[in-house]
View 1: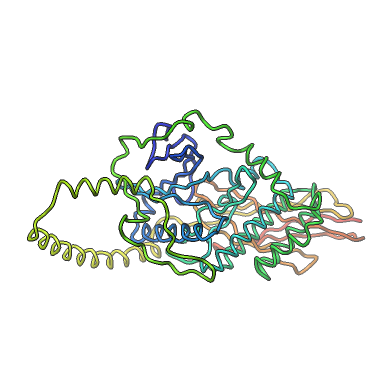
View 2: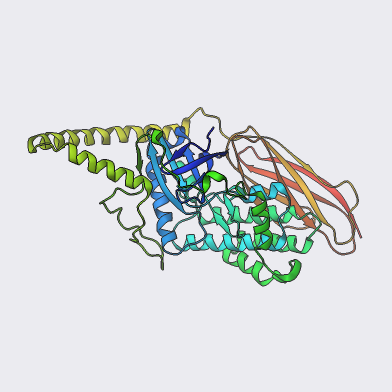
Length: 452
């Protein structure tokens, strides 16, 4: 789709792209030659009434949080409009994600614990500031070359839907991360997997602070007895699209002449965006550097003011026309707000649906102290959305709840359950998977024999 000769607002676009529910992400090179990211919003989404304004407000909130000292988010450099296109530009790469690392193999337990502790702390800081993430899943957890875990797309899913997610949604998403990482260990690290399961339960019952403390206080069961970024850093460098910087990243990047008119949406030069209130300890009104798009906008405005200076009568007529236009726009906005509300409720566009589920358990008899992985497969109609599910075990009353974020380009998903059995017994263990939403509720189960 893109090549290294293409760019937007001084960011050079590469050919490495991938789709999400928001639009098309592209690996990019920033004007100073560093790895960055560019998101071209889906025009069908960003063009809906109110969506662009909500996205801009969300990003400006993030920028103030980052300037106030929050280090766990992918920093956004700018949001710009180029004709009908709206782009979000990040100051840091948004690849690889946890999804990328897990697709290549299991994450080492020490690195997985580091990732969970850091993301939990970031979410707690967001919550203390009065905001939530709203879409925590492996695709929004970015691993840097140093092994740090940063969250991307903060609040964007909520912005396009016009909602505010509760803190419980973030806790549920974090718990799903913990359970997914535990299941990826297989039989290689049963104690670490059990620790992650306990942390996931703590997140849903006691909160993220308790879940974080569980990992920190019980880190002795991890291989080597410590939480470390080292394994994550090695895995991230191995999966990086730009492990070696491409040649074109070494030279200064110029804005291509054929970009067209671009305007920053985050800040109009010369006007204050106004303070945004947060929770205790978070500052406001910090001046940020002028972006490339703002420099282009400012130079264009100065050129226009030099060429064209209307007289007073023309100015009064122009102001009258603007007042009429504003009134007409307000009426139109009210009509469109009602229309978009009806669209969300009554649209004939297909919604996420679960077509089938299947649960598979090991056929071999499991021995003493076994850590058994039960695999549930959920097949959808290929639409993006959210699935909530729970696992029930016949030998205890513990209910393991989870949330799955689906994508528009995928129809099959696995939701594993790790079940550790101990003690002398000869029993038939049965795990039941219940998909709760979207309805109707679907159920399947599988059994295995434990003999010790």
